[in-house]
Image 1 (cartoon, helix red, strand yellow):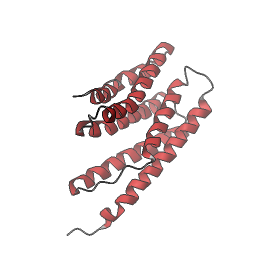
Image 2: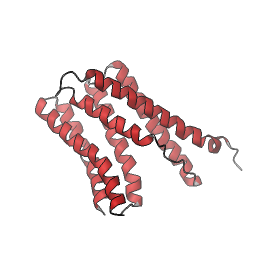
Image 3: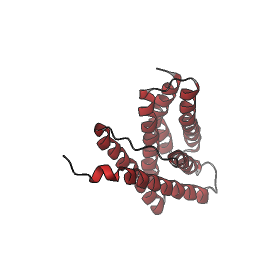
Image 4: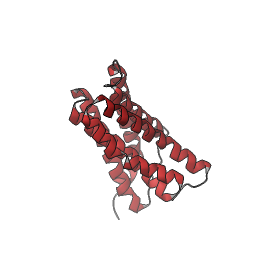
Length: 182
């Protein structure tokens, strides 16, 4: 165990609390949820930075970090769709994001036993950042009036980047998916 892995696991551990607070639908709970979310989102950047800086990059951290990202994004997409923070069009954006995340995870699962690694796209960090910012803006809507346009714009930006990086993964994997089995 090291500090970066502890930060990543704390990000995972706080997800149910954030979801619970969002679902409480009162201003104090929203503020607490938003504060915890911002801290969790910042740990996404801090854990990787510290792992490299302290030279404690680990297999556990490489596995847990993207899982933590997908868990917090997925949990909030579902929560916001359920509790009504999303319009119908943003619910479709959420579905597209979830579909891509699950499809790429399935692709990695399929290729892993074959020792095939599709490199992470240079845009992938921007994708994750845009998702985290978009969800933070949606979470802030009850707290800070007037963020609707920014939240919608970031959600669609995040959706576009998410779909594009999904396309890149599948395009990179296509030769491995279409070759005949021996």
